[in-house]
Length: 100
Image (cartoon, rainbow, N blue to C red; front, side, top):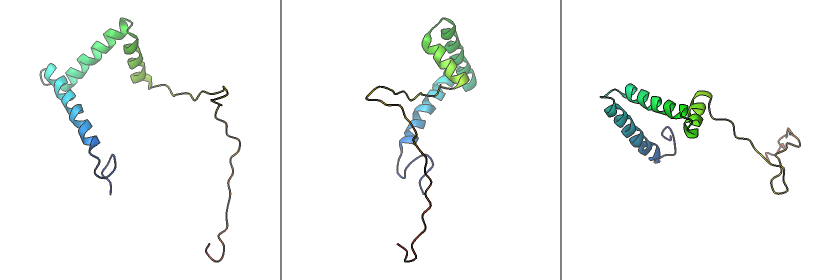
């Protein structure tokens, strides 16, 4: 059975945790060992930048509060027609008596 999060033998998820853990340690170190205080400082900085009008910060705050907006599938020109569902068909098939 595959380990949680990927294919058997895939160690990429473990590698990602190393960097995540390093960021957590750095945040805690900057706040005298308190990870929550470090994250609070980071959030304060994000809000400060957003209030200054920094578009990236405003966007990040919006994404964190409301979630990222759904991506729209756009089409309509000759090379990129819109996605259309013409029909949905449900087909029931009886197996043959000989098993084929």
